[in-house]
Image 1 (cartoon, rainbow, N blue to C red):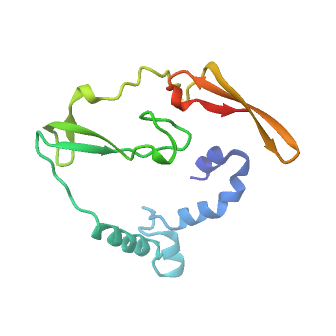
Image 2: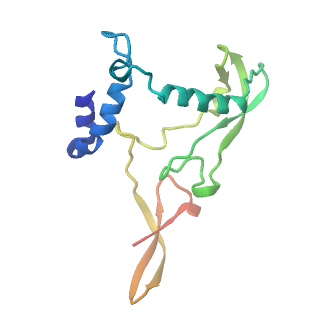
Image 3: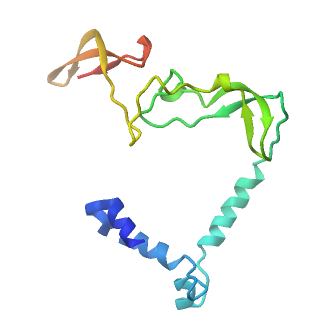
Length: 171
């Protein structure tokens, strides 16, 4: 576990050593049949109890939903900061997309929707690290911004794979 932490946090792993110690001491070990914290202090860590309590609060407002073939549903999408999806960005980007018709019930919570509604991803070449290269198409406009005692020249750039409403102001 420590090796994974060192590889993940590279030069700043020493800042996270306390979190690693906490994680190590509160997970069950097969050799002793309990967590090291429990073996050392003789009482259970209260983390699991707190997690269970929080889960019970959330479960009060959650309801199990089952759908039938032919019903229409909306898919919940979670917007990522800096990633543009579904033609809109910012606060007004959609939380739900659809409606999609359910064609087949695969499992208790798994369904197959209409294949013609699958979002195409062939428009953007995505690298293995989930990044892609943005290329500017043309400059749409110019403007100057006054910032205290400095003037900043801004240009409005239209990017490929985006519509004209999504041109951005760049320095």
